[in-house]
Image (tube, rainbow, N blue to C red):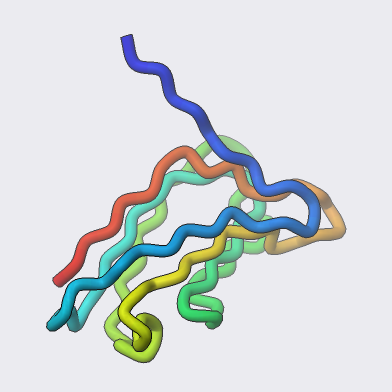
Length: 101
């Protein structure tokens, strides 16, 4: 039996991950499952903003990042936060997968 634990970003808060990036990486793919209003930043820049479209059941999202300035210091910092803070329907994050290319 597998037990899964989802993370929820509280009002005004974010779920943050810092991934070390190997030398020579030119693209990073990221797949994640989230429900709720979700906005994603990478390297301090918005890379996805689902707005209220994220409401309802969990959805799988796939992003491709090919701008090395997002991980210029050798790590990629990704934050998942509420894209519509007034509604307090922040994201519930089920999983994140990173692919280095």
